[in-house]
Length: 283
Image (cartoon, rainbow, N blue to C red; front, side, top):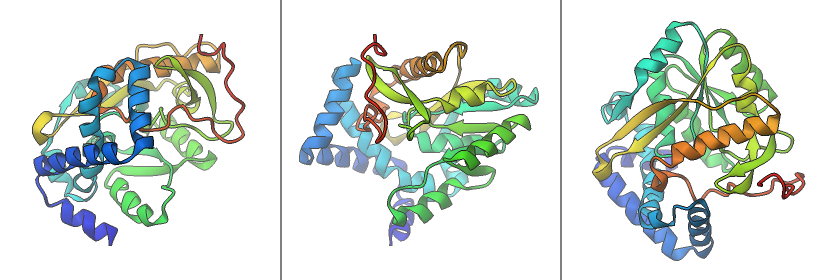
């Protein structure tokens, strides 16, 4: 039923989907006090409170555009995408080095992996959805030509490591809250967030290049700009230092189009079994 609905919606023009998404964003914001508190609280804490109205609409677009991204034909989706700085990516691939693509929950993050996979093989880390009904839809949409999934466990980590050793690119969402033992507390927009350590560990395997990427929505449903940004931070020092450097890079990326970040995500939650952060971490 859900797959059929998504396929039906995927036939609609992208401007229509984004219009409906903006309306949905406002509906959820007005009807859900908990959602409203988290969205406003995270925006205000990060210093982007002035972007609230746009963020409400963009959050709805992120949901309603999924049928188009997941179920429309790849060539139709690609026709709505332009790229910025892909020459840099191509030069790294031509050198035979692996790439660690770091894609935060910014803009249409679902489309970035698909766009990269149009040009080269890509393996991304994947955490199955909590609702079983969504699993065939999401896995079928994400595991397309040249796009491969690695489970979010030790088996998946080994798959990603092997890809890098072969000089292949991999992709990770670095701002997901990791499970117990897979992260450290690090500052993120002035607050302490439990942060993945895996991206830095993988980036230090051999000589892969770290590249930040996101797909910014263009206004009026006119498509997306997939941007590729070199990582300029340092991954030296302790694990906490590495996590802090990646969070800083994510902050700089998000500041480019703050209304399109997934502010309703509970980024600052304390995972079960993890001690509360030391107050000194955020200093």
